[in-house]
Length: 156
Image (tube, rainbow, N blue to C red):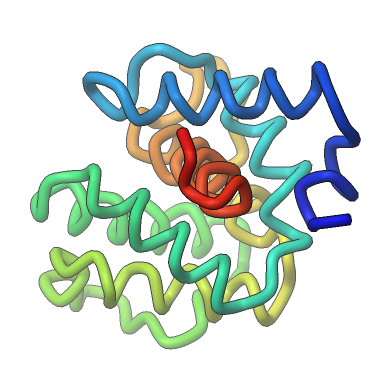
């Protein structure tokens, strides 16, 4: 039994996760799915991924963002962490230009994942009065969506 079957079971839940993954991959990366779906699938799948699978999914998700969006997301992530009294492993405040590269951003997300699975979701939150930051939605939803795609053998 593979990881996806362990997390989602068979049948309808897997089909719903595949549908979510397909919607993420079509069109703009912040449309076609809700903030709640992004959080739900991230929390259900991402904490259970081995580091290499997590990093691959994160890089694929961050590839969907423009370089400027990746840099803006890194800054937003750092600000959110500071507000919560947390430190992002491997991220120096004020040096966000390097995160225009999806590999660099995926490495930071993976370090967070290895330090504490679910840390990214915890820092990014969601459900604030104004809703989730669109880049946070893309990051969480994208990591989950790409993990589903990869766990299904890329057959989406």
